Length: 292
Image 1 (cartoon, rainbow, N blue to C red):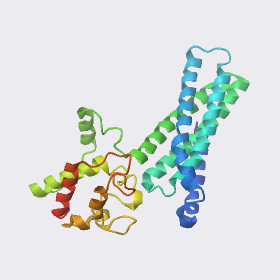
Image 2: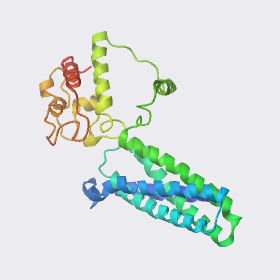
Image 3: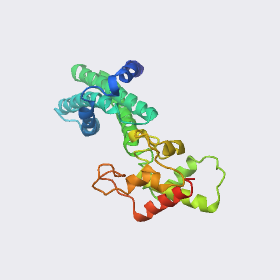
């Protein structure tokens, strides 16, 4: 398996050399990226399904093999490799102008590419099994197992980019969420006064529920995030302050959440759950308090 890993890492190095090319593209967006990029979200389900089906077939071949199963397995694996390559290409287009966290984007990109390389080598090893028998069977199954591991990792990072890092645990039972909180506990910070703390906590809950998935550490649409005070005061691409402490009327954030649901600029955007009246009032009171 060492040569498989070495080849995949070499491919990652080659892929990393694309970064200067990506940044050098005029305007930051290559031709067709706005159209082709979103198809990554559609096509990515094909390799997931095909590789999972391949693994299921391999389990059948392990315990109850029958004639022709290897040919079916080769077809499933081959289609998985083809769709993984297509998904990787579309993913590159998707990464342009996505306002994603650079760190998580790099993890998702690298594991996705490693998955494609290892899956292709798995197909080669399976072809060897078809030609010379079980001599390469152990290597092939180990490579298929590595493909599934990389599939899980790449899928997790992709989900974190789209939905935020806590998307898997946000609706977990209290026991699990409590364990996760203790596992990731940090040193407590100094506490503000009670009224100020209460207002800040209310707004933090609003941001967490309605805003941070698109304007947080993993994704920054419009180059704006709500989890950093500096970004809140400065605003995003509009250049207008999202929050003006003490003045809700001059705060762009307040104007956007108060727009009609049919308006193009309303926040959260159409299709997302809008802020309730109580959440809007909490946001207004928080800004009046100086946005602590």
